[in-house]
Amino acid sequence: MGMKLYFLQSSFDWKELLLGDQQWNFLLEVVLRSFIMFLIIVISLRILGKRGVKQLSVFELVVIIGLGSAAGDPMFYKDVGILPALVVFIMIIVLYRVVMYVIGKSKKFEKLVEGECICLISEGKFSIGNFEKEMLAQDEFFGELRMQGVMHLGQVQLGFIEITGDLSLFFYPDEEVKYGLPILPELFNNKIEVIPAKGNYSCTFCGFTKNLLPGAQHICPVCERKKWAVAINKKRVT
Image (cartoon, rainbow, N blue to C red; front, side, top):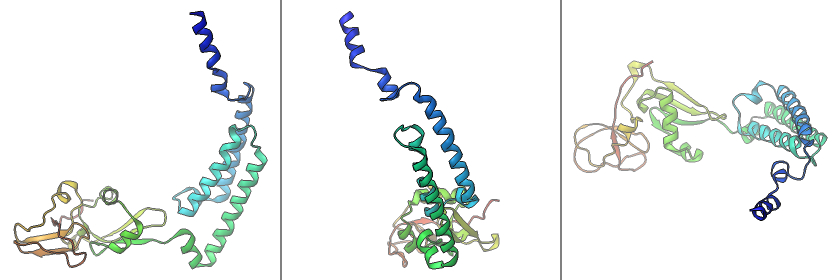
């Protein structure tokens, strides 16, 4: 029993597990390092302004990740000094200011750095070409629409994905709502290839909607797909 206990103590070092190769007093230094880096982060974000900490574009996300990376290591790595991290912060902030200045002067540079808003829905149908550019998951996009109270595409005149990733929708007035592709799972998933009865149907791929006759398969004239869902024209509940 004594030999077994000795073996466990000699083969497993709790101090190394908890502290690595540092001493216990290094914990106080970690507290001080974290406090200093926290102050640097707060000051840096104040300098960046509200735009830098609200909805982030791709460029702004890169800036925030850069700041976080520069702040993390000096907090608990003894061999990483605070001054080099501070220099990194200053460089990131200066570069951010320079880029934002150039963006304000050049629309082409703004488009290159931050991208542009993309139209995903037009006149109650998907803009398929833009969807392919954005590589959006259909289920995730439908979820975003449902969270904004959309039941079917016939309610939406225009839909854009902004450079921040937010979804902006412009709705038809109630009296102009038309038949459109349902995005409620129980309706959308009920796909058919052979039309059972005359009525309004929507292509499940592009949202094209048409009054179809029963019988043989119908090919969508927009995307050339063959799967349809029964279109609905319910007004929005606001």
